[in-house]
Image (tube, rainbow, N blue to C red; front, side):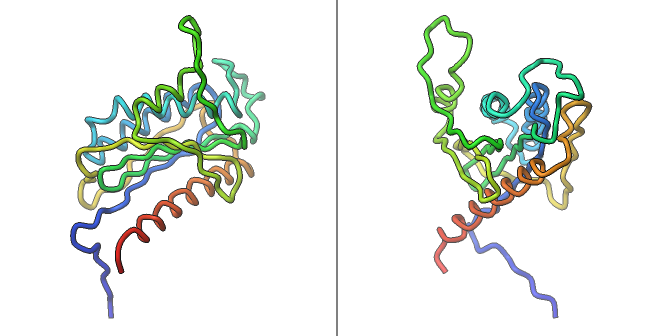
Length: 203
């Protein structure tokens, strides 16, 4: 006998897409590509520009915490320690962007001078997003996440498969324990959100 589970009426699906990247400057452009492809597939193209901006800021912060900031790092400089993870998750009218790095340091919003070249990332995220915070996965490191409010739910095309994102050159994540940690951390973040989503509905 085959059993079929259905989502209860008016209950939203949870969609997710994730990627591990080498913690090098080109990770920012790869993460934006993931945002563009994913949101187009989820029928959320109207939010691409804002989500790209927020993702870039989150990835830049992760890079500064654990990555290589040289615009053109040498291949031998990229080690198995230099990995970040990015993830998008849509549920109902909520779009969450997660970025994992191996540092345990919590980012702090600064108040830079008018002529300062940087330091406004978290201020921009706070002004753009509904909320942001830090998630501590059991796998280690941290996930800084930001939530965008949507005016419609995600709606992927029926029976579609995920679109591969080609990672070229130095942006390919080095294999090793940190890459595994990033993968596990993003999975834990998704499962934690899924658990909270399930608990929020009456039996």
